[in-house]
Image 1 (cartoon, one colour):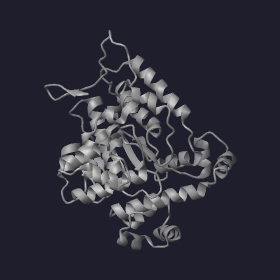
Image 2: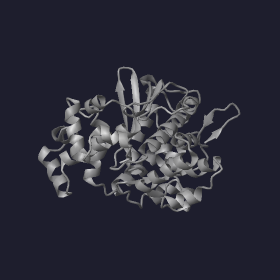
Image 3: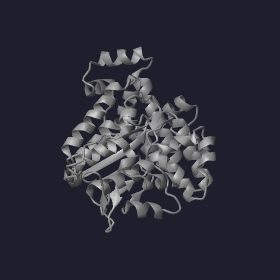
Image 4: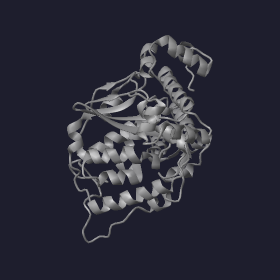
Length: 369
């Protein structure tokens, strides 16, 4: 992707008819890998190293301290454990004293930082199809963060959330995802594109100028999710330079990746619950209907994996509650309602069972998880 003299973004969609169509070599390498739950391709986070350099900090010692090999950051398809990557973000925020470090990482990234999925987005017929490709296929490259695209009346919402237990520093990773998503939308829609507003599940920093400069839109903090809000009319925009033949080849490559993956059923349930538990009814029967299987089949498959539906649902509720308690000032009553509790006292009892503490005590202690 390059910038022309007028500052407009162009990409590889305008293929020379005389040139052969090529699938990136990294796609073939990816097809030999099985991405385990809790693993993630570096992707956007590859930009951690140059972002640290912008602060005059040698990235290698911090990367080593997080338990990672700096050589991994030479390739966005490198697979790392979420726990190590989250630890690295925590170290980076502390060393740079920059609370919006994730934003800086994401704004350096481009649609091609999303690798195979980013290329498929570039060659989708419409912006809506591109975003659906992102949402549907993100698990091929990321078993930590889940994306969802929802519409209400004339408003579209692209939301990111971490669904793995112990999601320390998840807010920095989802913040980076929002930042690169804006860059991706500007590649698809034009450099002047901006969302209607941006929702952040964190307290407002002292200086919000960096957010306003990148998003060019109102930013609302202390929200329940990390979300880009924009008009549904944007979904109908045609993607300039999209190549149908290349799109078909990329879709086939992703189908192979999905077919080769040895997905763990409880992890699939966690992903689905994370995007739905705060918005929709999510009983075991509802989830079975969504997966087009009988309720008893769902229970049996989870039991065979050593899990239960209620246990997984409570794990997700606990993770969401911890993130909101530590990273935001959202009142307890609103957190309780968002998680489906009829009153704050019921939420408090459940949280005490999960953690041994009340939500108020957890928030005051500021524990990361």
